[in-house]
Amino acid sequence: MTAPSIGFIGAGEAGRVLAIAVRDSGASVAAYDLTESRVRDAGLRLLSPSELLASSDFVVSVVPAQAATEVAAACAPLLRAGQLYLDLASTSPRIKVEIATLIQSSPAEFVEGAILGAIGITGSATRIALSGAKARDAAGTLCSAGLNTVFLSEKIGTASTFKMLRSIFSKGVEALLIELLVTARRAGLAGEVWEDICDFMSADSFQNIAENWVRTHAVHCERRRTELEQVVETVQDLKAEPVMTRTVEAIFARSVRLGLESAFADQPAEASAVVEWLENKLRQTENSGAQR
Image 1 (cartoon, one colour):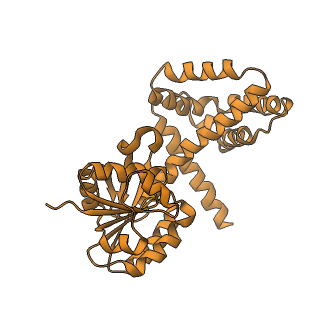
Image 2 (cartoon, one colour; image 1 turned 90 degrees about the vertical axis):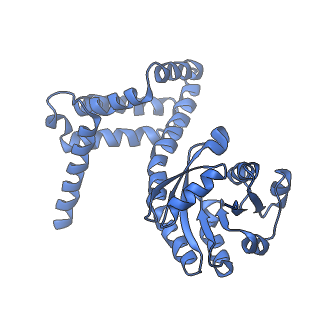
Image 3 (cartoon, one colour; image 1 turned 120 degrees about the vertical axis):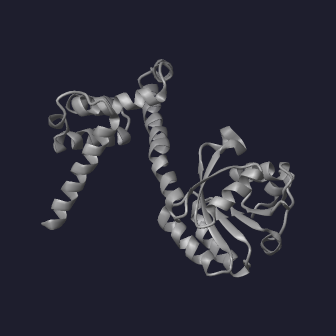
C-alpha cells in the first residue's frame, strides 16, 4: 500500500511536531505556514497553499482556533474527490460542525481531531482523537504514519466535545495553580506550598485522590464551603484576587443548596453516585425553572 501524501497547514509547535513525525515514518510530507521560516527551520518541504492542496491526500489543519473556520473556507473550493481534510484546532463542537459544513460542500471528506495532551511534553506520542464518517480509516492510516491517532466516533463534534470537557480540568487546574502560587508568593510561602502540593499529589495515584474528593464531597460539602469562605477572605487580605476561589466556593454552595448532604447518610462507595445525583438534581431544577 502506497503511503499517503500529507500536507500540514500551520507549522506552530503542534504542526511541526506532527509533521516531522509523519515525515520520519516515511510518508510524503509538505507544510505551509504564514511564517515560512517555521517550515524551513523544521526541515520540512515548503509549498504554497494551492500546491499543498493539489498534492496532498490528507490535508491537516493545525492552526489557532480563531483561524480554523477561515482556513477551511479558503481550502474548500480547492479540495478534490479522494482527499480528506482533518481539522485539529481546539474549537467547540459548534465550530467543528461549521467547518464540516464548509468542507462537505467540496468533494473531499472531513474528519475532526482533538489533540489530547501537552504536545510540547509528549511530542508525537500525544493522543489524537478523531471523529467523523471516515475517522476510523483516517485513524488507522495516520497511526501507520507515526501519529497516535484513535477513533472515537462517527459523529462530528464528539472529539471536540471530549476536548472541551477535558479542558475544564486541564485549564481549570492551571488557573487554580496560578491563583494559588501568586497568592502564596504574597504570603511568603510559595516554596513551602508548592512542595506540600507536590508531595500530596504524589502520595497516591491521581485516580484514588480524585475519587476520594468526589465521594467525600457528598458528606463534607457544607464544611468545605464554610472553609472556602475563610479562604476567600484570606486571599483578599493578602491583596490578591480570589477569582477561582470564589468560583470553587460557588460550586460547593450549589451542592449545599441542592441538598447533597441530606441525600447521602454516609460516604458513597463510588464517586459516580455523587455525580449522578448532582446531574439528576440539576436537570430537575432546570426543568422546573423552564416550566414556570
